[in-house]
Image (cartoon, rainbow, N blue to C red; front, side, top):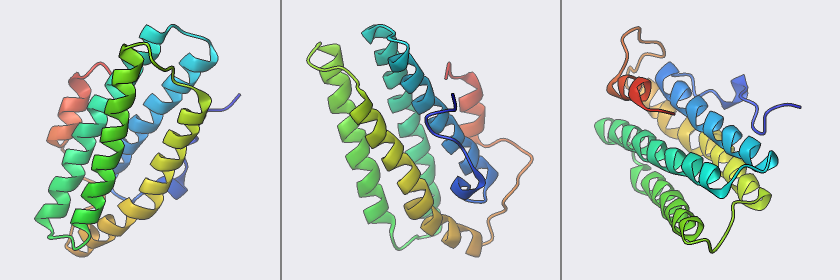
Length: 154
């Protein structure tokens, strides 16, 4: 059986650092899906959700920093999309922690749709502007996000 979200070249924004961050997010969504399918405990699924939420904040901060640097005209609306997802995930975390809900397949499909649509639509727009300003697609030295990612138990 394949992954819940299959990474493909169609999801690539063309900048390795951002693609690597997206792959990590996709991996965590896949990990959560697998935990649900194999009927792992709520604590296990909750832990994955916490890691996903924490890394999502780091990733969004990195993207938003890049958008501010290039004075991206769609910054406010893109940031609002990020804030909406973070708000939703935080509410879900609180409900799961309080035992008021479980993470089901409906939520997983929401995360999958949101992540793939956001990458393939919204992120491509700002990355196009980023490349137009001279950003390199491949950089051999790791960014601060890459170094942090190496230290996190993701």
